Image (tube, rainbow, N blue to C red; front, side, top):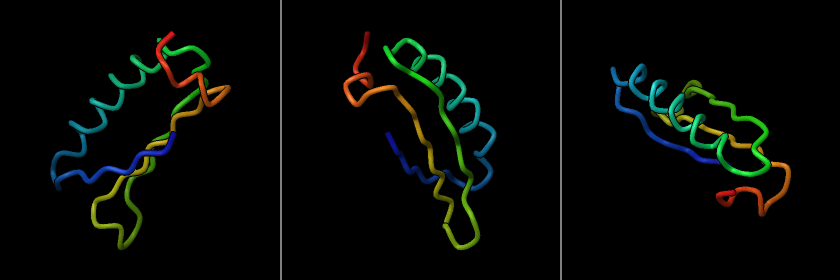
Length: 63
């Protein structure tokens, strides 16, 4: 699952904390493997990319 989100300047640490909480929630889904967070690159206008990995497509539903 791939998600892009815009984060207001100065709120990056809040966003990272919120992402830590979402990782804990994702661990409750069957087949959850891992999650990666990519901060915005040059010219990305504050857009972060979050990648959740599950064993199977249907695994992204609550277990």
